[in-house]
Amino acid sequence: LFTKGMEADVSTHVLVFPHLAPVEIDDLSPRGNEGESPLVQTGQGSDPFSVKDFMPGDNPRHIHWKSTAKRGKFMRREFSREQEPAVTIRVGAGPGDTTDVLEKKIERAASLSARFIAEGYAVAVQCGSADVSLGRGTDHLLGILRELALCDVSRADFPRRVGSREISRVIEL
View 1: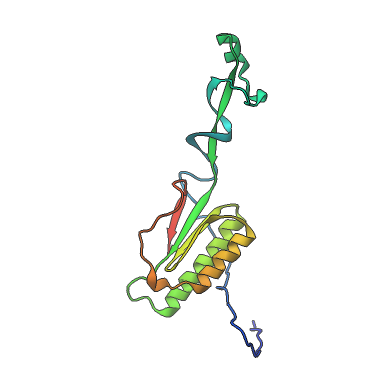
View 2: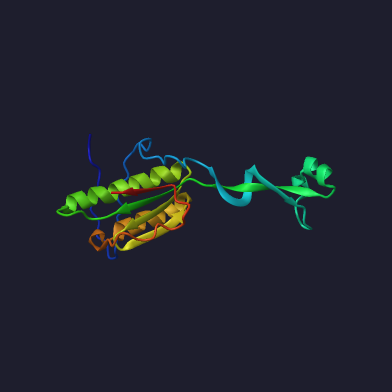
């Protein structure tokens, strides 16, 4: 193996993102609320939740014909809202953590964020002074990497809000 690099005179600030390493998330994947799971709320899901009176503006495709025939008035199916897979990664300094240990925690948080986002999860990160809310996609990952590069782990003040109450899992590093 070899290391590739270069030296350059830079007249401006350069932000170096944490190293991204391949990680396995099988043992970290949310349990219980894994993947999409129904909530006890109505929404745009695919699983029937209940039958309600048909109101003007409702989608006629959702008419529940059996209930309509039984009651003599139009009835519509209501669907349960589905919970999307989400995870919050929290990075904090433990007693006696060295700079190298903190750097490894930040790199692990960055790698986990990249992997979870690639798997379709919404990801939030809390790292000392940084607090990135739930989001998806490459732009969100770049925001996470920026905040992790700038975070001051020694300023962690847990417990903090985890964001939405629909978080599937919190991972603390």
